[in-house]
Image 1 (cartoon, rainbow, N blue to C red):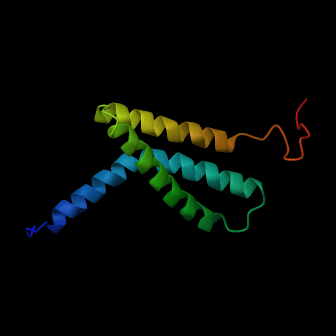
Image 2: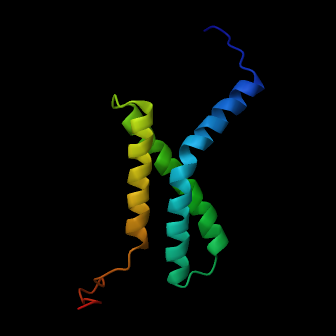
Length: 107
């Protein structure tokens, strides 16, 4: 196996690019999860926000990677990936119309 040296600048540039790609999806997901958690009376919103950011980061990275590997151009993959996460965040923020017991909350 050949030995390959990579400079620290290259590693930082790649990590920065990944961060730029994932930010637009991770931030709305974090807002949605943290808001829903505090609405339901959560006790540790800061810890929830950190966990939601990491989860949103991973979800966005996976969705964008799926679209990018499906022969979409990179710009289209970014838009489709971000759009998917934004729609998921909107669904998280929605108020439930039906309780788990089956009773309707709205008429």
